[in-house]
Image 1 (cartoon, rainbow, N blue to C red):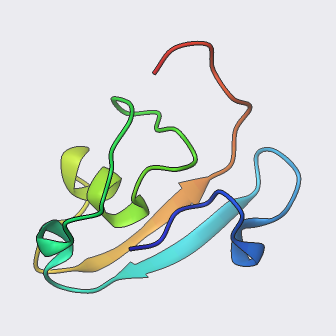
Image 2 (image 1 turned 60 degrees about the vertical axis):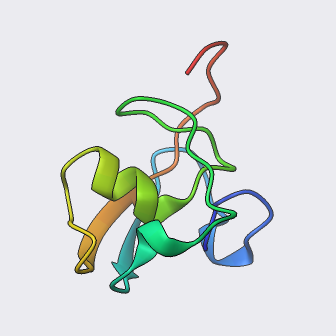
Length: 74
């Protein structure tokens, strides 16, 4: 499970975009957390967020992730 928080691969100024390749079976990770709805907290599973948002399926796939400022609510 990959999150943006504390991950050196997701460092950069806000509005930076990253291409992410998600493997199949992301929904099987028991520790995967998801906070948000279309904009997700940085400790959410990136691939689970993509599945939730309909960008990819649990079969895997690639997507673009954008860094944004934190929100008060998710």
